[in-house]
Length: 383
Image (tube, rainbow, N blue to C red; front, side, top):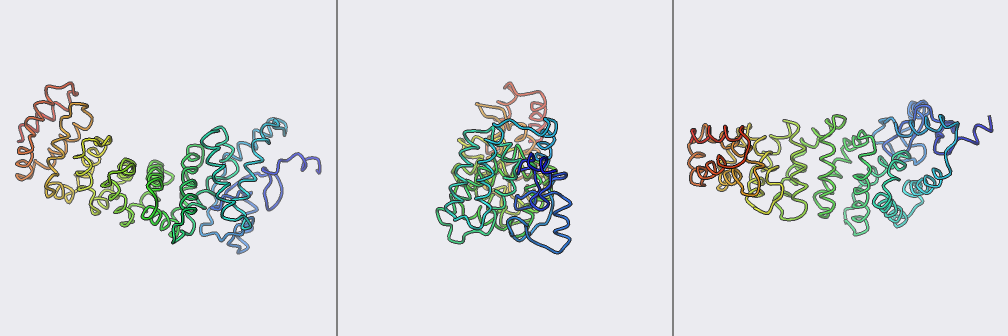
């Protein structure tokens, strides 16, 4: 028995039972335990993580499929891994311990995080190892724990690097880890970070929202974000800003619109005016995506009213009907004009004043697809 115990790598032992994992599951702290052991711990009334002693705001157990797969590989190899494996894994375990330990100073944790970011950038092959030893939930926990009200530069650097590492690891990990943001305190942290954080932080959070919206396993979280008016207002405001975060803001809004319930909430927060402003700027690279979002939300009566009411609303859509550089967005623009012009004389008049007839004729003479040309012809008849 002792010989077997000696051959089991430390990473493969449950911290509670010290036995080989049979069903590894991770807590929101990023620490992994064997399911039977941690369930007994929780059933006994304990509300903390046994290793870190952090209070568990979310006691959910997420299966650690990566570690289970790794143990299976180890068993198939007759309980042996090459020396390169442990050469790679041991320093990572030390970095994780530094980030988890209450004895580590903030500066030590910041340096550990900088090393992890360097690894994810320069040595992507280490990313699966980082996932296997539970870095993803740990980094999420650290990034969205209690916000520093002073937003010191060190704190900003820590969160910026933490979020970058999270985004690098997400393609390798279990997206269920993101559900820790369903905790009220964590969701509030996300909003505060978006409100007061740097442009880089806003960009990372927009990317994170995109990932959340893209997975069925985080669909409930996507709906929760859509019910947070302050966050929706902030992300709409980002689109209006002429900086690097505007593009990621458009992508995040496009992702959030995957849920119909989110669309109306975004319209309430001024989405139409933001999209109009964005599309009128000829230098914006995601104008076609903004046009597609507009088409998507125009099924809402309030969105139609907002577009017609905006002095430049119909004009912005007419501009998207035909662009010399590309036809992307043309069909969405034609569809959108049909939706608002069908029942509104004011919209038809504004479209004609904005030059829609010329735009449609140019579109019909272009190389756009037949479906778009058919819709353009229908719109001409409507006008």
